[in-house]
Image: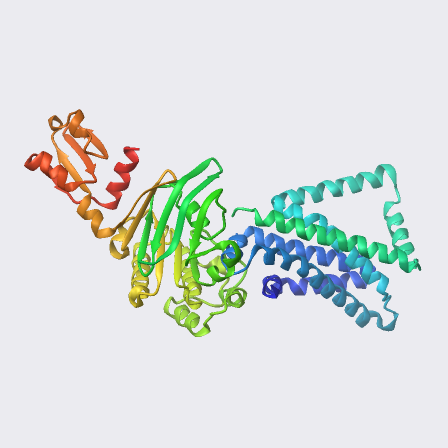
Length: 204
Length: 285
């Protein structure tokens, strides 16, 4: 299964410098590490999915001695590995640029992994069921809704989001963290099982 | 004789196309040519064999095993060459090897290197710059590098130039020498099969028409040419289908000896090509 995760890195190895350059540029203009790591992780995963779809990779992978369960599971495990990798890159970069002033916290890391896991839980079953074009359509629609929300309802949505993040990071209650972690884990595992079910019935 | 592939009573309805009560066997140690027109169900059958598609009912077994519970064991022993590109385009053959190699237990780097050199494949060029023939050779090198016992090819010669096609057929011929390998090979360029196939499996409209030894087809089938006045309701029954022109008729029979007895010297009896058999079978459907 780890071969399949390694495959995603191998395919994108030529653009890896671009990811690193992006991280450095964002850090230089003082963007918080949280959105950087989230955006890079999601972009990387989206690229991996697009390569698999464009190049008929499902036919290749399913003709190799892998089970369908392994192919789907490698995605879900891979997401966690890639996100950890981007967290390390982002915080490593931040440390090199800012030295000891790096705003490192476990809560921030939990928040990054949490956001990525929620996004992936929602995206992957849709990806396995439909084509990625529909995902892009859905993403486009969501962005439209986001813009409309800012304009019509909450003119300071970005500010509010930042406020919420700050509140989350300032939270002290361990119990609440546990509930959040548990909820996300259940969502992720549920999505994983659903994707396996969808993929096992798929025709190529 | 041992069967490597056994499909039994397969039913599959798929995108407006259906395979009905479809059964075929592929024998170990031989080359089986799999023929049929466009849309006859060749690719669907190959996908069923590769478990890329699942049948609605019936059983698929390979090496005597079913996919359920033995999927990995089965695929360890199969090499595949597809009509469409299945490689990642922005990846070199060298990296493609790195992706595929860990999937197989029996991967042999030396064999892979041997065929890469033999086929003159560039290791450091992106797959998107490979021609169709090169991609086909790359698939074949991969199939041979993991010592596949069964090689399944979907239209490997389509879109290749004649020199390339002949090269491929020579390679396949060499592979068959040890008698351990089995090749199942779909094509609609039937002349390729003259050089290599031991068995011919013919399908039409999702139905299995026949599987026969190649030489027997020549013994049984015949193309009959004669004057129109020889045909009446009774004699027309002897043929699979008939093509009539002003100059006379041309028809295909599956029983050469019987037709020779009936018509005697009044007709010309010729050896049909596979193409003739496909054409008249489709016409008579």
